[in-house]
Length: 349
Image (cartoon, rainbow, N blue to C red; front, side, top):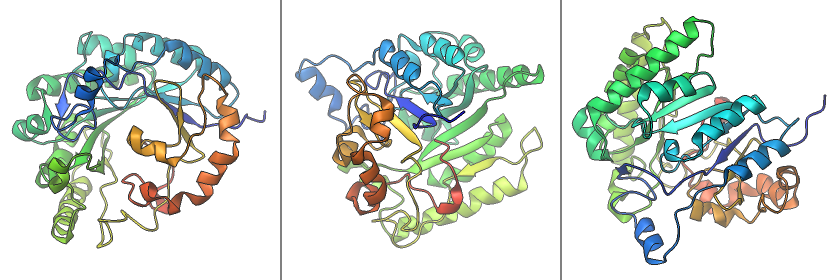
């Protein structure tokens, strides 16, 4: 059967204004961010997506390449009041769920969430930014090291139990933002992941949303780049010399060397892993081509709103085709932290 044109994965910005932490690098919830204050002063309601929009898009995407969806990667998706409906939609449309969470497991216990999520998730990415309590809690403000560590152990235990019975075995990932604050703990984060049975350590370089965090970027100057590259060496040494409890090696993703051009261009030979492969839909239904911060990705163009048109029409539109051809000339794409070397293969966001 010939499939309709469309993405293999869609990210829905379900509830970007809901979070119970204040991570210092977060576009919306950092102590340095004015987003929440401006929203309150403007009298605007929190942005939350209609579950009916999600259902409508999934119905339209039948017989397309779509096989996976992601709930909001901004804010904490498990705070979305219709999250259980998303789980049901995954069962109904035979889709996998790819989840990024801060590991606090709001609204239910860690065990309750784990038993709901394990059967239908492809990957659960726990935001993780330190190998010590002090570093983790100083970056992810409001986080409690011991509590979240126990939540991850609970999740991995239930994941392993489910897989041993012949059920789905979802990947578990530690997802970092690479920062001056945690670069010296990178190898120890890999060690911690191995001890816990985490399958993958993945991260990306800092989006410097605020002047106050510009000095935390590992791309900012030659000295920072050199320190980053030494940390990469140590992290890969750990990954080569220690195996997971399963006997397999841990995967490292995006933990790669930077060169002198990194302050301007992460890797001039790298390509966009998202165009013509993935789609993003914001809370108002606007289609976006990538995961850049919402205000910045608006500069890539207006491709349409899913309340007014179909995903297939946007996918085949002239404006989207033009972006695919010309994105390397766009300033946002030149400085993007997410581009990948040609050899990296498909995105595993």
